[in-house]
Image 1 (cartoon, rainbow, N blue to C red):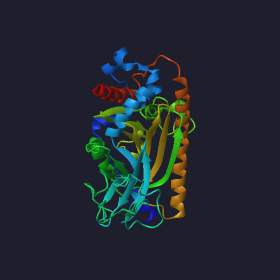
Image 2: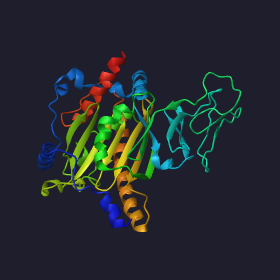
Image 3: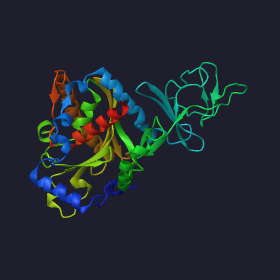
Image 4: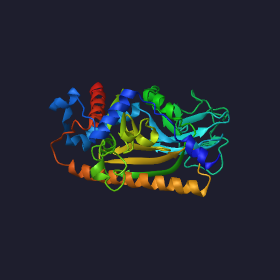
Amino acid sequence: MSEKKTIELARPKSLPFSTAILDRVLKQSKIGMPEISESEFIENKETSALKTDFYTNEEIFASEMKLFQERAAVVGFNDQVLSPGDHFVCTIRDQNLLVLRDEENTLHAYYNSCIHRGTRLVSEKREKTLKKIVCPYHSWTYDLDGQLLTANCKVPEKKLVELPILNSAGMLFVGFQNDALKRLEPVLTELNDFKFDSYVPYAVKKTIEEFNWKVGVEIFLESYHISTVHKNSVAPVIAKNASIFDPIEEHSRILMPNRSFEHTSVPTRKDLIISYFLFPSTILIIFRDHFAMLHFQPISAEKCVCTQAVMIPQKAQTQRMIRHWDYNADFFFKTISEDLHLAGEIQLGLKRSGFIFPSSYEPGILHFHKGLKEFLKSQA
């Protein structure tokens, strides 16, 4: 496929949004500010005010971990397991997982633990593809579909403990409970309109950050800060701080118009930055010819892992395309570094006792916290 065709493949000619939604975007583009939320949640101080210890308290953090057990997590990318025997290991919070593709080309995610004595089965990715899974303790052996092959083992279970796994837009989601992946459907259904099936990671960064996971998420749920924080990066592209927000059940969508938006009669992906929030801690940002992912995994009340990935339509095959994607990846990581630096400053400011008050310009944050509070209330 030529470079020209590759670029055209990545740029749909239309947007999957109604005229009413695009009219709202146009209005905010001309105003240059986020759409003001009219939610009753804002008017009530008892529900809109957030205590600062919500971001520092270890007991609250422990309660939130139940949420992460019930929601899907991004564990890796389909590009890592394209062929039978391809595999990788990863750690999600305190759980070590083994992800692989079996001889029938089926994806599997297992707890990386032998059913015999619990020993970790695979310590790291091996250069060669897996043929069998062999425990390093007593050599109990499993087929790639998780079935125990070692004979004469008198145990009630003879299969590795498996977790639901889903490949969507080149990302692999794992659910620690059976309905976790189903909860993503409202957003993933809309993502199908963008034809991301072939996308692969071009650049991936994983860092440990010194802030509460919610601080990281919140930065990407509003556009109110763009002209201040990103004045030398993305601000020249976007129509000031303009955006509209729409909830999608517990998830949400934010649309931010580029400066070109109000000057075109039929806007396309090049005129809009599209952001999806997958509750509780994944953000997808769709640009004109690629998209990016951010995923926050909690470590403690004031520490988290941030994974950033730039996803492109297919592997770069020429030096020209490598230069093109290098530029886009560098620009994205530079912009995100501005956000993550700010997140650290926010965490330091939150060490004071008292409250903070998200405004009506930040409906995404308010919707996020409404969902969090509803979950924690259901667990009480």
